[in-house]
Length: 120
Image 1: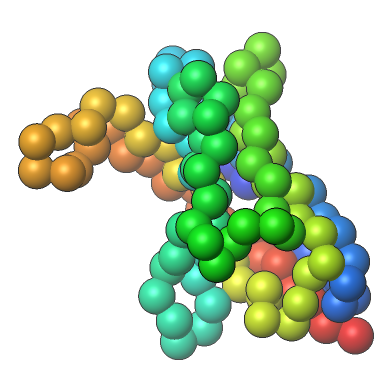
Image 2 (image 1 turned 120 degrees about the vertical axis):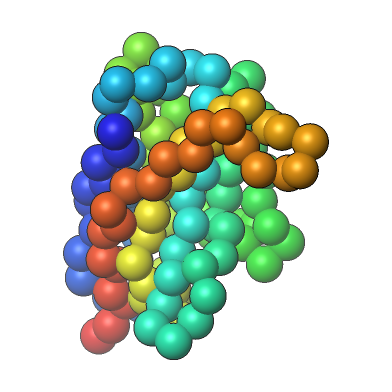
């Protein structure tokens, strides 16, 4: 359902934009998110954008990451600036819909991930 693209090798201080193309879902009603997982670490939230295009960032991610979506293209984006070696990780796209009382989502989809490596 979700296919990420745009990852690769970038030098410290550089920029990169990731894309997440969705298919088979009602894209415009889903909250879209980007997560990342570095080797030996837990998966962490980078950014989310609601169905009404309201972005949300954890405090640790504010300032260098910008999430956006284009409902006409069923695509979400993550712009990354001033990249650091510690941003090296696999970045995953996520789509959620239907928050339940227990905190889970009725529909919760993940992409296969795209590798971002920040190195000189």
